[in-house]
Image (tube, rainbow, N blue to C red; front, side):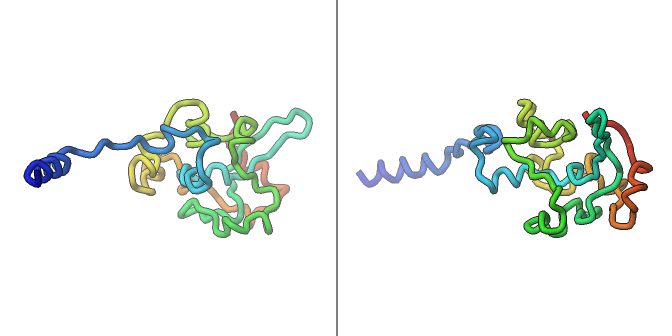
Length: 164
């Protein structure tokens, strides 16, 4: 009896464990925990870019200016947890408002998953490396400029195109 028990344990040890699918493939955006949701951010910095809305038409224009809190080199917020204290207009991306944020880039993980496209190869959750988003040229690392030293009246000089 003990011999057959040893055999079954040995057999189990040799068989590879079935790999579980990652959470972003098995859960809807609504089902994700806060930690899972936050980990979907690829660190591109594109959502932290200043946008200008044309009052008459509602057209949203993208600029190459980043929020003053964005550390352009790392594409991360310098005060993420308290960002609304100094930047009350900072938009929180959530499952509830995702469809309204038409200015999110096609590369955004939140947008990709909501459209059923899955994560791109360069996403840190897929690649295992937070640098691949920059290596793939998706981030704002090499072209964004902080709004910190730009007068609001001059923002229009930094428009790079229309959103959407």
